[in-house]
Length: 83
Image (cartoon, rainbow, N blue to C red):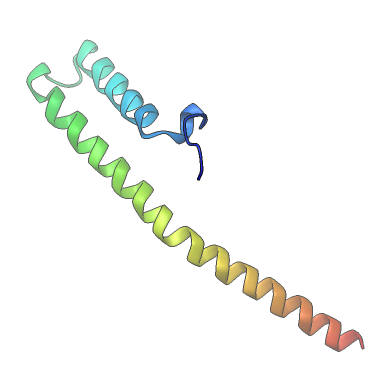
């Protein structure tokens, strides 16, 4: 069983939630965002980031598979051509 307790900070969801909260807090401090919209903006940004991470996680292995198969077939074709 894997132990995820020692994962680097940037690989945790807490890291991204903290970054988003900090950015939204700074936007409120510099009066770019009204304080009443702070919670809604932070929630929306966290949902967007979670969706992007989920999409990359879902698509990433497929893309890696396609590239590895393409590389393998190209290598095989070059070896056959050189024989």
